[in-house]
Image 1 (cartoon, rainbow, N blue to C red):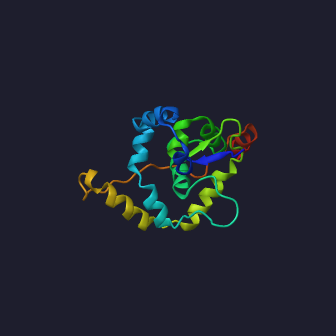
Image 2 (image 1 turned 90 degrees about the vertical axis):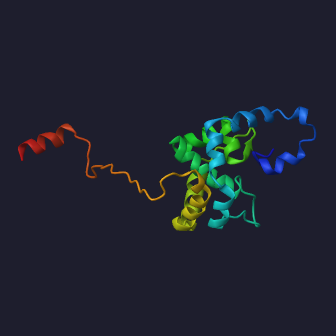
Image 3 (image 1 turned 180 degrees about the horizontal axis):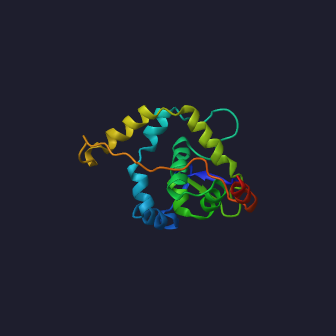
Length: 174
């Protein structure tokens, strides 16, 4: 049994629309916050700019190039760990629609390391300037005050340690 199907491969095989029980999920997804985020990102343009492709040799990948990018956006959006993201992806149909996959409930994904592998693959191809130009050209009509630059001025301490009793006593002696 195939563990995962790409939605683009599956959709033409649905013969009768009255048996398409995913239509309610798709309409709920399009009106959700996650669906709005999905519409705001040009996954196909970003994937082509990164030169992400399906590999013609070997086993087919679980995720399409767009799905790989969507998984990384989903990880950042949810703030989940890799293992928790895969667990939620197995059970949440909206996450599956966001990533363009359908995971069979009886054979879920168990390899949470796939998230790290995809992250490393994208990092090796990453060129921020070219991706930024794709997003800026798409979002420009929705942006006000294009001459204003805003930055985050958050500061973090970098040399923190856990204070144990022994360390506190030693520092008190010195």
